[in-house]
Length: 161
Image (tube, rainbow, N blue to C red; front, side):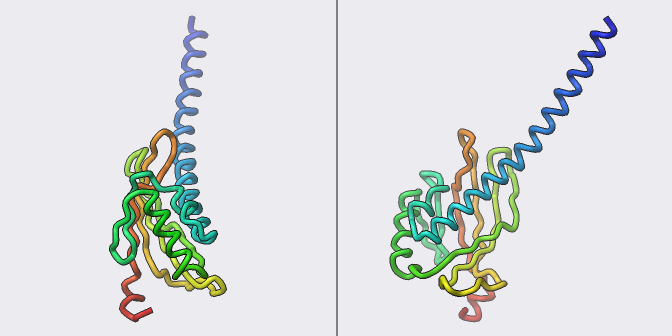
């Protein structure tokens, strides 16, 4: 009887450790999935594909452009980006670095980034041109961007770039 009790205690201990490890791993897996969304945006920009750029966005996402204009939905985000890829940003490349991932809940995160767009043959400057903030939600096991706010670096804007 005592032996069975000890085995039960041991099994419960192992299960609790395993469960704790899974929770820790889940957060790192979530962070990796969030990073992959940012990488997808960069990939889409550098491919000059509005559809690829918009892939990580939720179907009903809100996207505030650096000039304050609001785009509603993945389709509009993709279409507007395709327009700029075909014209003013045709010969550019994008770099986004994640500064912070903060999990507000297990299924909601906000990330703060720094970003630069430069001509395709230019080097990226050390100073960020913008500081996009993104809100992501996890639905059905998949992380998607539900809100994107692009904010220009005020110091650069004040100097006239």
